[in-house]
Image (cartoon, rainbow, N blue to C red; front, side, top):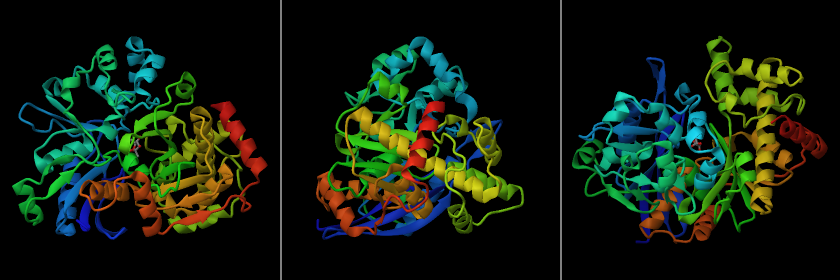
Length: 489
Ligand code: LFR
């Protein structure tokens, strides 16, 4: 076929959207047809995802999309739902920011030493990796009754199609997969006491994943068979597939609730140095490895906004960012990769505490706090880009910023200044775009090679370049600040 229309379901931590993409003659036309909030709910002291509300949002979005040639789903990683022997969901999936995984990494370390775990899985330490969540759930009635675990996009895909599978890029975030063989690690699972038979068979981006069930077609008003296609169902895998890069001398930063900063590689880096630098080897589309570090991202700012709003002094984002842009650069900075900023609540106070504890001036008011967050993010971006190049022995000339942070001009400019490299910003809806191109390719509408896909994206999407050195701090000031963060890690 010469043309086709595809629907991407992309679920983020604070909102979900359905975007259609019409691919024709080497161009891709995007249309956001539905956006809905994603509001986590705390019950009985546990933070959950409202997965039925999300599924409803998916159905509403598919109805709004109208006739499409295929549907693909992606979301955040690591979280899952458990199914009983009848295929029914057991309880609401738990949010990765829930505190139940506290202490689980230490428990796992008693049977699998961290160095060994890294050598087998290549995954950075994050307290919420699926492995730790499954260990935290051990002994619960729910896990005892479970016959299947489905990662979030696979769960929604199952409800749409009745077909169960485990998509590979997202499976790579479980800390149970070996990035060298791209299959589950029985050695790790056995040592940690995880039952791998709970996982449905692996499938790869581009694989067929069933068709919409008759009941789903009825509810969405869609006619005829509608295939579901596996995509990079980890949103970051889809986002990286959509990086509009030419050649391979680039780093990427997928910005949103998180900043995921690193390189695309052909094979994993499993050295001990890489482990202690907390770099991860997640799997990407087309046999690639996403070698990156998780940075707290705009979550830091989103949480501040929530607190100020609750305190009765709501901030308008664009005015706040303008005020932040005229604050003094690098007045105080914190380590934006520090997992202590993971839980929700009281963020302005926690930021103030971190500055006080490291002997820096405490930010006064929202503008200085926002500036502290953005300077810190830009610094964390620099450190990740620097470290990734050293650890993977690769040099880059350009930094691509994709995802929601593309709309934050100050963050893009500070990132260029901090890295001392040009930043190419766009697309903002990178995960949806990556989702769409993998479908379009699987259905023969655009070329197969990832390089050609990226060339197509360069031509179809509006991109903006930021040059370093616009006066937001000198190279020496950024270098000094980076050194200080590094020394206090
Ligand atoms: C970004 C993301 C990150 C993952 C985090 C938690 O949306 O998918 O890649 O580490 O969410 O799942």
